[in-house]
Image 1 (cartoon, one colour):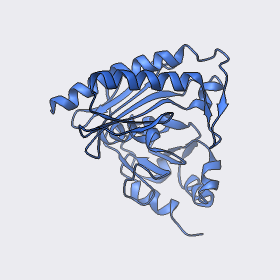
Image 2: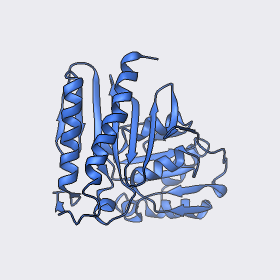
Image 3: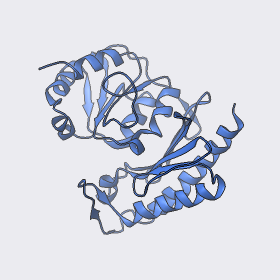
Length: 258
């Protein structure tokens, strides 16, 4: 195991918990909400949590780069880049729903090598380092063995996103082909696939900071994580995670011409 990877991974877990605990003190406290130009919400908790992350990482790994939702991209010189979302699921956060998390992803020379998703309101941490497996807290997790669409569970955030992508008809076809569908939302869709509670998580409208921490966790759990074209592009708005067994078939359905 690469010692530098392990050192940063251990630190990622520590700093994700610090940042998440900072955000938690504002949860269900009637915090003021601002609306950004893209119509997404932001709060004092988002900004403060990201500032905490940036400061802590910079003090320990001064040559590493940084990309965060609230304060943008800071280039580095070491080959490492931290990609973080201080509160993934801010809409849930401000409505008192517990499904939100601090996401810390780590990239080395363009490869995503580690991810941590800490959900303070749930008291739960999903995490993975390349070559070390995926875990929920201290329990090793694996994707399910379900091998057919008709027995599969599908997770997503909102059907409105599929309308924006002009794939709502294809998504409804996927609904018809699968056993159950749940609008869970945000990071949690993907963690449910990683821990074998469902087989497919599909989203549109994501950014790099929404998925950088999640891809290593899904893949270390034995799953597959790509964009809708079957490749992986951190900067595309479309993403699909599966247990690997129905990945190609799901891509075919979501890309069918109508």
